[in-house]
Image (cartoon, rainbow, N blue to C red):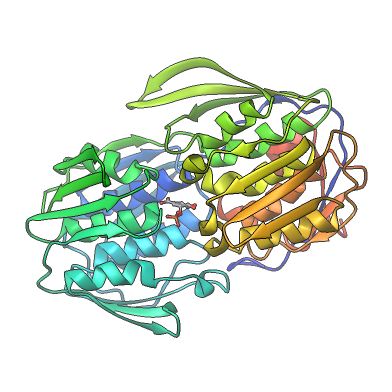
Length: 450
Ligand code: S3P
């Protein structure tokens, strides 16, 4: 079950063609950052199109607990009156980030360079995830972390009252770690430098610049070298959150595997640090086109058109693309089941420390539904059965992971027998309108017992 409710067993039944427009919710990564940066600016930030999923709502609550005024104006519009860089107040209660690794890691970064103490917790999934990847660099600023064995939540961070700037090479490809260090650097004097070998999503860099921070990125042999000058006064912004490519992945993949489908998913950001799935699907022979390509807020945006693609081929996915599609491997593995030949996914160790061990969760569920999966620590191979030949018929464990639950719901749209998940409640963390949206396209999802 999710942090906030009871388990919701769900089943996806084979359906006719999916058609129509899928207006997916706002981008989760950008929504968290909009609330956090709004809380650090002096004055009122206005946000439209905010993702109102549980993860982001938990971040909104946390920003209130640290002293910002955060108001839901209705219709996806929010107002944040910030407290200024370094202005966080000490929260009176434990901060519960629910299911959200992004929420907790980014917020730890911000408070680690203020002279306050805060305690963080989450649901059973988040409390299993590694936090040392964030607290190690935060210690360099002078913060102290005390958590459970293995660096797990619940965890208390004693912020550094006199932080020093750091130079840090991120050891794993992680936008959350990069962002936590940059957010900590905001309240350290002088220049904080973060180096990442592989490019990860760059929303933090873009948005910090938008809020008026001095930040630059140079690409060198060592990778991307990001330099931030600390203690800026951040200026409040008006932010229109674009629709989430990671949520778009579900109707797009559903249309590709479901006979006769033709679905338009308008207004999707195609930032190269996020769009790897779409390139991969096209390489597999998917009928996926970009319509009305344009620039919005400095980001490439297009309407995605996905049509049923009966002749998908398995491919070797370029490992250099992993970071740009890291959240999309679960649903890609579903599409791969309907392709002919093997889809080989390497360099994906990070999948093992997401909301669940996503290789393990998908491998077990795909196998239960008749698909062969081989795996190692940082790779997996799905042997596709070709369109029309995937048996289905199993109930899969979603392991408190929204993307696992949604991936199996997509699978059941084109298998011979329905596919179920033990708990669809986590879907509300990132895609609260998943069921009505997919039903509107023609999917047949049921809540078991209803
Ligand atoms: C995110 C970064 C990624 C991604 C997550 C969102 C972010 O995590 O999986 O869903 O908004 O920074 P990692 O930083 O662990 O790769």
